[in-house]
Image (cartoon, rainbow, N blue to C red; front, side, top):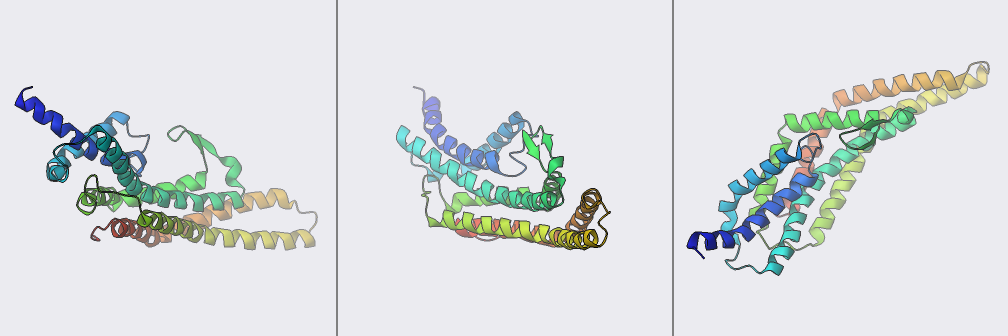
Length: 260
């Protein structure tokens, strides 16, 4: 076998490991995993990033790799990329949950529509909250910070060195807690306003039995929910931004990377 071909055969397994870690991020991370972006574009971006990173981390891989070591290592590398991407994805789920809670309490849950890009029914307020956070995420360069965290992970967690431990469990526990707390903080103003409005309508129904509370209340609840949710999003920018950086810092801490 010519020397050049032999060198390529020895390099391919190491390159595949780099590619798999990047693919884990692309599969689940916000923005990068969006069905709106064509699959070919995502695949090309992953290949380009892998080609750029590979020369820097090639020395981390032993010269001779068995098939079993490559397959086992590929699973671990996929887990590293997926953990980093999923951490931010869970935060977006929390934001969407805040909108869903508001929508359900306002009776807007029946207004769900089918989103062809996601392949499922979506809550309108949940989607609104999600889009606002996504725009802030892109505007602040969160996608670049996410990629930087993944690239820095090659220094903190070299190829073929990742072993699942309690740090990953603690990371997801912290992220899930932060996402749930964020959902409650975003939904709380609208939920409180809806509770007060429902209480007021209940008193009115007792004093004015002829008033059709069901018809009037449904319309008022919709306006109140949309108005308060809009005001909440208008003043929650710092909260959303802080949550994004908090999750990124948690990822760095639990993977042993220096905080940005």
